[in-house]
Structures are given as structure tokens and as C-alpha cells.
Amino acid sequence: MTVDEALKRLRDLGSERVAAQHAKHGGGENVIGVKLGDVRKLAKEIRSDHELGLTLWDAEVMEARLLAILVMKPKMLSADQLEELVRSAGSTQVHDWLVSYVVKKHPDKEALGQRWMTAEAPMLARAGWSLTSDRVAKNPEGLDPSSLLDRIEREMASASPEVQWTMNYTLAAIGINVASLRERAIKIGEKLGVYRDYPVSRGCTSPFAPIWIDEMVRRQQ
Image (cartoon, rainbow, N blue to C red):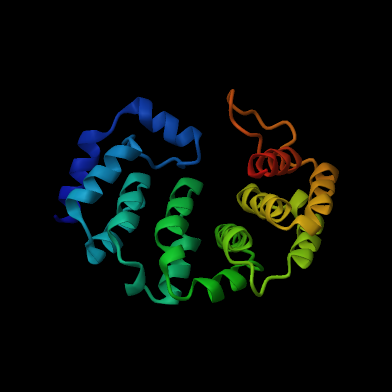
């Protein structure tokens, strides 16, 4: 499939109603309005096509970039290429798919994640904290959760919205998974108050760290 054919397929699937939803939920302004499930179906039809993925990314359209993420091959990206993709993601929706489906499968993810943790570019820092929260939950060896809490306590309240979200994930991950630091993580969450009044749907857990930690620990018990 050529890039023009892929873009036409996406445009044929688009609607103004879905475009408005994407824009509202972190999709950015350059959207077609394709349902995420339809993007996945098209990716399954195309299968892996790394060069097509790179070309689709350059179209700078949200759904084209989501499709690109699903068809490109993570191991064919150099570390520099991957960093540029993360830096240029343009929207949190694209960024989070990129981290989930590409960055987490890249052989250099650990080194890159550590470097991005101190990056000034918001999308890089968001990715760094996202990888760190994942490590706290699944593979904490080599991490210093207490030092991470120090940084979160100093920086999260004033961090950009993009970075604040995944810093908060890390705060919650420490509180949930590191019993010896649970009380401190909850106190930091209470002190900073980030997402205290975040609106959530009925039946969903608040992202406010103290509530989130308590609820996940309760479920584990």
C-alpha cells in the first residue's frame, strides 16, 4: 500500500464527530476523525511496512501517525531516530501509542529512558517518566525509588501537563509496589494535590495518587 492509498483510506473512514472527540482527548488539531479501532484494522491489513510507517509519520496527521506506529518496526529505528519521533509526536495520543508500541520494544529503551528523564522537551520527559513508572511496576532492579520521590516532590507541581501525567504515574507506581515507601508516596500526593479534583466517570479510579494507591493496594489484598 502506498502512502497516498493509506491516507485516502483514512480520510474515507473519518467523521467530524470523531475528529472533535480526538481533539478533545489529546489528539491535537490535525485530525481526520478515524475511530482508533478502524486504525487498528487498517494496520492489520497492511501488516509490517517500516518505510510506509516513516512516510506516514511525515504526513503530520494524528491518525496517519497512529497507523505509522502500528506498521513500523521498532528494531529498525536507530536511537536517534526514535528520540526524534518521540520529540516530534505532537500530541499525547500519538506519544502514548508510540511509547507503548514502539519505544517499549526498542533495544535501547532503558538508556534512552534514563536520558529522557532529565530532558527539557516535554514529550521526551513524558516518555522517560512513562518508562520509569513501568519499570517500578515490573522490573525495579537498579532504580532508587526514594530518589524518584525526591524529584517528584520537587518538580511535579510545576511540571508541564504532558510531563506531570507520567510523573504522577510513577508516584502511584511507587506507592502501589514499594510498601516501605507507600506512606511517603501518599503524603507527597496529598501535599501536592495534583489531580485531586480530576473528573472521573462512575466506576473509574481517580488519578489522584492517594486514592489511586489505596484502591490498587486494596485490590491486591
